[in-house]
Amino acid sequence: MLKFIAFFVSCFTFAQPTIKDMIAKDSLLYAVTTDGKIKCWNLSTEKKKTVTHNSRFTFTAIGSDKQQNVVVGTNNGKLFTLSDKGLQLLHAMQKPYTIEHIVFNSQNEPYLIIRNALYAPLTHTYWTAFPQQTTVGIRIEKRAKEFFRFPSCVFVDAHDVIWMTNFYGEFGGSFQLFDSKERKPLNRSIENLELGLFFPQSIFSDGKTDAVYIASGLQHLINSGDIFKIDNYTAEKILNDDDFDLNNRLFIRASTIDPVTQTLYIATQKGIYKTSLSESGKIANLELLCEPKLRWEREPLAMGAKMAIKKLLLVRGKLLFLTSQNGIGVFENGNISYLK
Picture 1 (cartoon, one colour):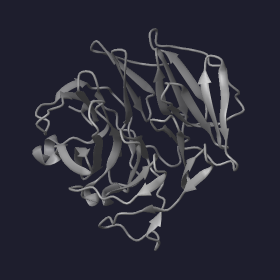
Picture 2 (picture 1 turned 120 degrees about the horizontal axis):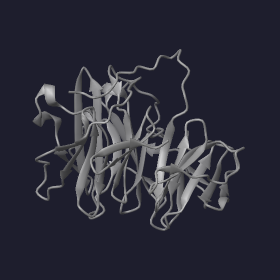
Picture 3 (picture 1 turned 90 degrees about the vertical axis):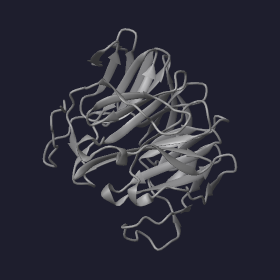
């Protein structure tokens, strides 16, 4: 039985600010909202914590560097570290572009996603020419063979390759790769990956191997969800929706792996599941962990709903789930609560 409240947001409905992204540091959880504010909670008490910062900035992205410092970006091209002492300017772009995503490689070098490019603040370098793979069913967007597609998911793997993915409703998805060591886009295909059936929703690692995992999901007439393990640019489906009958297929979005226990957590339309990773390949059994009651939105690029859970984080025994309409949920010891 589904435990969610169907909630389709009309284009005429005034949109309330929601949590855009979150990052954890020690016992603190930081987040940026869709209206450009910063929020912070103490996860030990689940109470709000005041963060000193200049309220004249509009914050659009949040991340953390390799020293676990929290970093935020603004809509006018400024990059700050954020701590109890407030904001400290790291970089100001020469032009006031909105910072959409922030990642760091193993050398702690920042890379920023802006609307039309990948940008390296340390060298003031932009990259806009990325080799594109052909997706069946997608009309030609540009005649150029190389251009930049704005990504919805960004991830840095164990080899300092930046993965950038997006998808286009039922028409499949795309990926772009950038070698941050050599500072150049990569022209690599991924074996056994059909882009027409690729709907990337989250990218993550197991913290143990060099493999990259991508959760793929869509609701379009039926639910669909796969999880790919990509090793040496070869994809393997460790969770395949073809293994389920139509009534039991899972619509997947946010997923993550506990690097200590090698447990995979998967957010679906039926709730959050967990399972142990198998060294032999495919996932055998799924255990339903919790069924949060959530409000859902319509997916603008497909005939179905947009997955309500956008991100999963594991912090000190708590499973945090970022939702599109219900804020941040906390699952611990069999109970669900929401940060206020």
